[in-house]
Image (cartoon, rainbow, N blue to C red):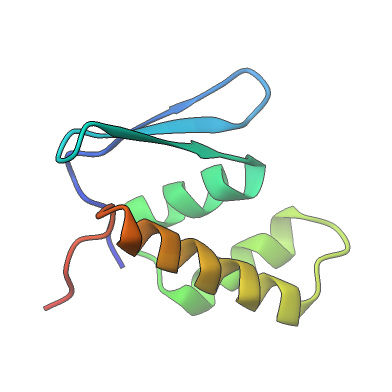
Length: 87
């Protein structure tokens, strides 16, 4: 998966973030896990790799919770036109 190259993410001092999508002039707020996932998808990681990132970065997260969270985040990114269409 790859983030829309025109989207801009600004990380805040508390490790949360704000994403600006110039395609629709909308902003999206990100929590800490959202920032980690957004960065991973900027690099083109897969859903499976994103799940592993959550497991590695956040103590106490189960595989099932990480999978659910990543799938929900991907759905939100798609809804906000923040993911490039896959070929």
